[in-house]
Image (tube, rainbow, N blue to C red; front, side, top):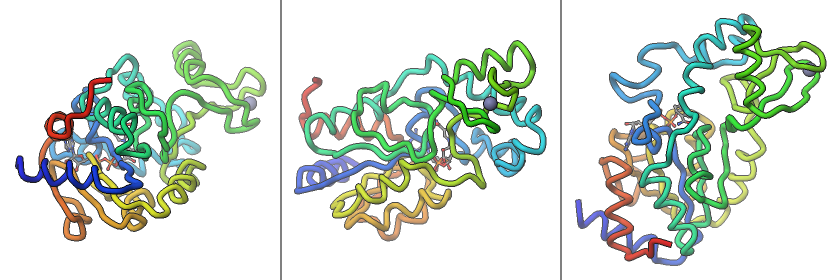
Length: 247
Ligand code: NAD
Ligand code: ZN
């Protein structure tokens, strides 16, 4: 294990540009369940197409919010862990250009990462599905609590968060991330099962790929380095090995 940490440190110190690509696994140590971990992952309880697709929201918004709103509300007040904090420090000290994330929990921004591409959107804002007017996400939770369904103050349409659901178009950030990866020397993939396309295809734009994940991923065979361990531990050990300053 320690030999792999040394190899990763050396890879990050060689000429970039280097990027990170993160998934739900970097946030499990902050207390947010991922989707595909055996036993605890959300998809062991629900079928994604039934609860996280655009058609499910359109067909039965009440059922969509009954499943998703309680889950999203647990994201409030959650704190970044050593994986998020380490990625912010690596960016600050020039080892990473930034973080491309599939997560909607804002924890990379809260941890201090400056360049973040949120390819599946985020839960800071929402918009009306009819008139497209934009609101802070808080409006959605407050209106849902008061009236059952979160509705637009202007036209009474149903509000939805600015996240990418199954069957939605990808976000602008996804296309920006694809372009930003041009010339990428090293992509550090952390805490993603790499099963959800098109985000799972992003490693193809990097010259070299490193995988940090508890379980195997479809990219393990092509990766120059694979570490099957918890992301919090790996990043703590990596920053110690690299002697990256605290600030
Ligand atoms: P995923 O659930 O498919 O895969 C997570 C992977 O992380 C699993 O392979 C698991 O073994 C691994 N893992 C879990 N905890 C880990 C840890 N502490 N250290 C190392 N590995 C760990 O998640 P995904 O690949 O991000 O794809 C699922 C989709 O779900 C994403 O598109 C994302 O938008 C969404 N999602 C987001 C959040 C969030 O914002 N925090 C939470 C759940 C799901
Ligand atoms: Zn409206």
